[in-house]
Image (tube, rainbow, N blue to C red; front, side):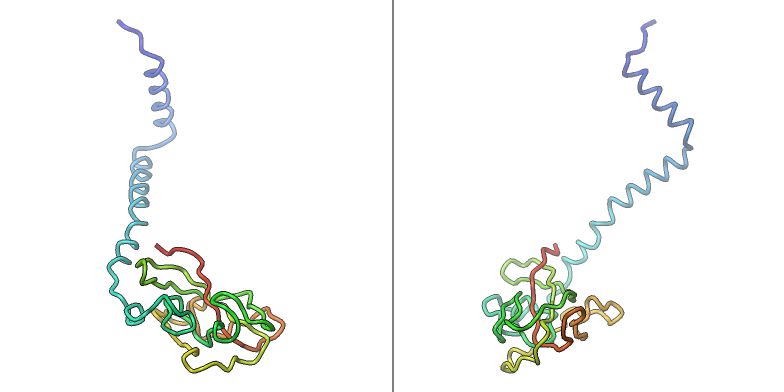
Length: 177
């Protein structure tokens, strides 16, 4: 009779050790939980791809960030800082960015991908007197107020020297896809 190989001896040792400290049910449960956990992340992505475009997404543009229909402004509420001497993601001189923000997920019509946008209020000066086309209130795919981090109806001048609202920025954080 031939003696077992070192690999066979090692495999037998590991299998017997596993059998000593676990039951068939626990092993089957762990295998089942692993199989379910591996399939869950794919589900929301598949559903997200099937969502129809919103009215804002159908009309959004990528050329002029000082207009309400600019793609990053899908969840902005207030005066666009680009119309007040600031930029798409920078506050005008004399105002201070709030350390907190609300977020939205906006679709770029040029590449068809969705991105996470952080909207930050600039505070410390009176509200910017910009043309009406710079005052936006878009709430594309808005969620109820029980998710305050996604609400654009709150003045977010918390933690700044002054609670006075001036304008709002829309900084791209990263890809949502």
